[in-house]
Image (tube, rainbow, N blue to C red; front, side):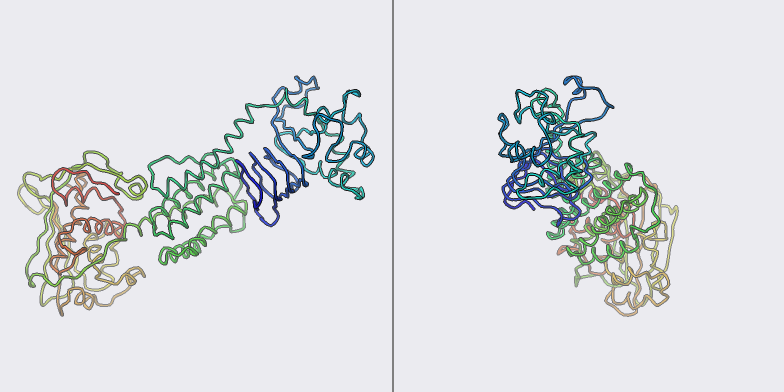
Amino acid sequence: LLQNCVALNSSFSAVESDKCSVGAGTVMEHCRLSGSFSIGSNCLVSGIRGKWNCPLKIPNHFVCQIVKLQENWTDILGLPKGDKHESYVCIYHNIDDAIKKHSTCYGVSFQHLFLKSDLNSSDLWDDEKQQLLWNAKINPIFQDGYLDWSIFSWIENMTTPNSSVDESSKASLDKWKTHQRIALAQLRSVADASFEFSYRVDCQSIFKMSEKIQYVLLMRRNEELNTDIAMFDKNALTLTWKALDNTIIHSIKNGSIDICSQAFMLTSTLLTNLSEVINMDKSAEIVFNRRDFITDLKSATKELQVNDFQKILLYRDRLLSNKPSRSDLLECAEAFEEAACQLTKLCVSTGVSVITKEARPQAGTWVLAEAPARVDLSGGWSDTPPLSYEFGGKVACLAVSVNKKKPLSARCRLVSPGSGILLTTESRNIDTDELVQSDSVHLKTVKDISDYNNPHASCALLKCALLIYGLLPTIDYNKGIENDGSSLQPFVDTFCRLDNVGLEIVSTSKLPKGSGLGSSSILAGCVLACIGKCLGLGFGEDQEDNDSLTKAILLLEQLLTTGGGWQDQVGGLYGGLKLGGLY
């Protein structure tokens, strides 16, 4: 579109790019072009904006500039007052016309123009003595930014050698003659220079906004992104979508899933904001298919291929091209937010792999893992995805004992011979060690573990820990296993690398529920640690690798659907006072 020409501080929004063209040698500045347009070669086009009723067409070698007029322009020029509107003038002439001479107009002599168009000098000048292009009233006034480009269509026809004057050209000329027009000489005193300056700054801010979106997201900068201008400017919105789409595609190509998640979340926010300025009722036609979107999203997040994510973005584009209602936009926004959450979950799950060790205790031996509680000093919530990925959160926290005791623990042992997995969660008094409450479940069939993602289910955290270590293949528990009554024992034997074996896991908390001391996350660390030690499993080369354990707890909490950040486990798994951060 812009080959061999120059565009300065301008934006373009074309639904059908094949209906848009710009000729070689043309310079455009401060324009916001939308819809269909055809701009010839060697033109100077400035300040084109607003709405128009027919395709914009500018012939070769023409100057076209739109300028806002002051509110009291009619008073300044001594003209009758009309209805109160925003008024704009369109300066339109050939690039070779001599402004301060009586030589040519629209690239032809005045004599030729008068002869072919039936215009006369009184149509252009009030003063018979000074008849220059400078004071010729050839620049039409438009109201409220609505430009009727058909008013200029006669010019190309009547200034082309050997062309015949058709009926449409005559109609265009009649419209031009009856339209209010002013001269360049008058424009100097009535142009709204302040408004034009602000408009040009706004044009620049559109580009700055789209560039900033990509910069802040791709560089993971802790900076505010304000997209308000996109709510009320079509070109700004188009550039914003393009910036977000480019960020999504670039991040997928480079494996930066956290950046992709943020771009999806910003897309959701923008769709929600758009719904607030849309007043249309919901149409009978279905313009957004949520079910198909989720299906394609699953494929995209599984394969992480650019083509799949481009397909996801088409759902938004199709919706926006169909004049969506407010409810359509909100439903699409929710779907893109869900996509952002799925990507965050996927991001959290990366970098955690289970490694099998040979060394492990004999069957019947309890393996105990204990940990202190933690106190959050500052920075809470900045550790929680997606905030931590966007802003690089930091949390100052302190590992603390309670009454000189480590209040959180878990223990695990192999039972041989045995069957199934016995899970127990218990709460005990910190001072007396007296049992306050307990809950147990014996996993014997596959469906017994199916409620792992319900935080209120019996021993849900322990079930998730088993799945993190690979008790069941991922494909099995993602299919939905609530009706699978088959025996769990073959999976248990494979998991424990022994035949006819059972497993027993007990988690213990000596903290009040909801104490705010990081009990659930730290307890998850204890459970994972004791299972790993008991079965000879780990998440890194060193079974004492707390970094890998911290990431595994994040994955466990995603599986449990409670989410959460890393500050709780960091606070308890690492001793003393520390500053934890995501880099």
